[in-house]
Length: 119
Image 1 (cartoon, rainbow, N blue to C red):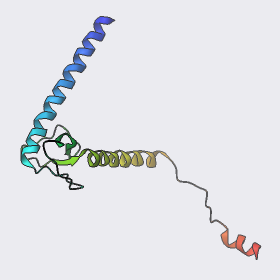
Image 2 (spheres, helix red, strand yellow):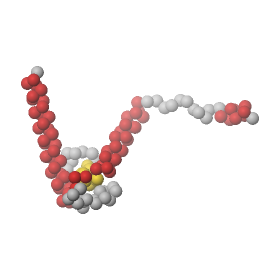
Image 3 (cartoon, rainbow, N blue to C red):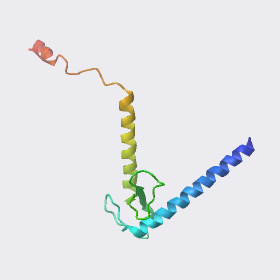
Image 4 (cartoon, rainbow, N blue to C red):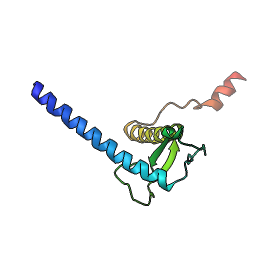
């Protein structure tokens, strides 16, 4: 069993290294192509705080990295997180809407009759 765990750990480590290497490549390209400004809030960055500027993939595909940068935009950490939370929220709503039925309770049913009875 320890032998299998070792193989899995090695595989996971290699996958992480490859992902980091790929990310470093497109990040460096994006930082050369675009001004160091958040595309949402317009916060500016310099060498001291550049780690807070992230590359966002417009189509959410991290493997789609055209050399012209057409699938990227630079976002600060906060705006990048907000962008991804909007996507997750939209996906969550789409999946729950199709799996649940509409509410059947109508708060205003017979309202006219109820108001007449109070008069």
